[in-house]
Length: 497
Image 1 (spheres, one colour):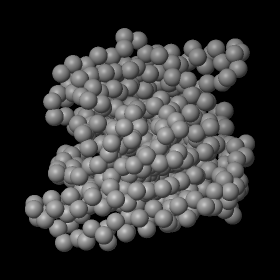
Image 2 (cartoon, one colour):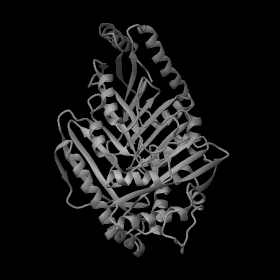
Image 3 (cartoon, rainbow, N blue to C red):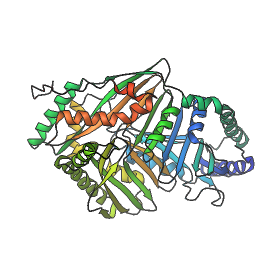
Image 4 (spheres, rainbow, N blue to C red):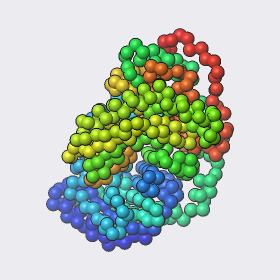
């Protein structure tokens, strides 16, 4: 991974001059083409350096992956105004920034320097130690940023320079970080062995007893039939432990790449904890004022075999319950976008989005953002959609806070990136797990409407857990053995205990 030091020094000198003249900090970002690498291998190499921040992002539609290592600058926000605060801090960070890159040297459509990060599902929800290091909102400008596409790659070195900083010293620090990463890459053979190796014996248990959760589903459906809500999304968790080995996030990402090629695959590490997943749901993609999003709601099992059972599963996807749930989400997303867009259009009929073991109803929605609205402004309008919260939104979230008994943290929140121009892409952090050494907390949610059946919703949540259960273990059969299939369950009394 060769690097030309002179352009970096030139940019740092210009940044130092601006910092001195304006008497404030200035962002400096320098890009150069480098040889292409598998960024999962680089992620593992970076992990060996024990960084405080790592971010991995990959989506197959544009055949590109990005990896951010360590921190040049960070935006941390809290409370209900987190998107507005993050947007103001983002504008301040890029004001008068020195960004050096030649379009001839970088990849087509190169976004330039980007901030990675995410936001909690609900900043008003009670928090626990589970999500230590993951605030209500966090955007990180990495010190080292790599973007790989096909057989090409671009490397960014980035820092924030103060008026009194020494240019040569900053250049030395950035070069040293790069050298440490290069040294870690020398262990490629052992890293590959770790990716292929077993995660150890997996044991799994419910975060909340199955019967208790199903009673909550029935109680919520009763409340919906009484007119208190139109829809409430109830989430649950399971806890997985690997013995004797710790989980390998690199191995998890490799398995997710193989099993869910069409999903957004992500990992965000904060200290010893890493949030990783493969979500099918795009929250928003913004490019030059155009926004693209989707309504994803209504689920059914899916098998590859073309037998009668598979046909029945296809029919269940288009059930009245699923179509009602999906229509609610489409309606709300269009209404939310109308607040920040000059025009909004949605596909007239939903399509079936078929994943490895589950399928969903999906409707694509597009719009044109009003002048000055960035992807963060779009997130403020869209999140949370009824696909992860409910409708009416505020009432549903209050019900979730009081009854769910789960610290969702960043689960079902926006996760993704924003560039210097306000373009970017965020997904909804579904099909995900929070990893801490040899422990993993997995999350899944189900949309409850008037016609919801508790046993059906519980089975649907298990289908959604399968994505991460399979990624945690080489032997998925043993990982699946925990599921207590119940043919007859007594859900009396109707109230929530």
